[in-house]
Length: 258
Image (cartoon, rainbow, N blue to C red):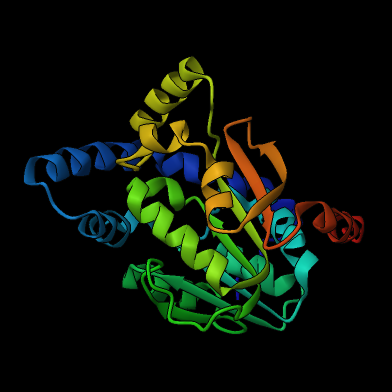
């Protein structure tokens, strides 16, 4: 089971920089090919995340943020949590380590799920599943998390996934995603930068969208937003129900963080 030692955390967080030039070159090549062939969004996801061995890693550039996301998630209870679009399972691992009794993790790319199972061989229920239609009953989990996945989706798909997050969550939904901007100039600058550096085909569309409004459409109320990771990323904490009433348990959960 994968647990980076504290003294190696710096290397663990930044080890991905070593591979970044190669990953960036592969990203540009796959984007050009996708646009030329007009392949489906999910085909691109499987080709990118399942077809590049250099992406299989034990390094997590968001390592320092995983525990923070998990602590926010605990505000609604610690019985069960679901990590959607889990990738290699780093956020699911943080949820398990935060004390959730049952942690499920799903991803649409089988290769990523298999790699996650190798990294975290116990304590997490990994499944291959499309986030557009989660195979769980309503209100199945105290908390649901998503890390760096919504911005990869076409706008219509993103809305479908948010609806599913709201459906299966009993209380808390926590997102770790690129920032969104109401200012058109900032959205254009950040969207252009992200389109060059990120694998997403829909980065421009994502950063221009009013995320809190989209969440509210599906019954999720934003109670806190933290700008993190060199101010490029935002943690968005949502609750199903009255947003003011949710602040107290969120603050209590953070107060318990050592």
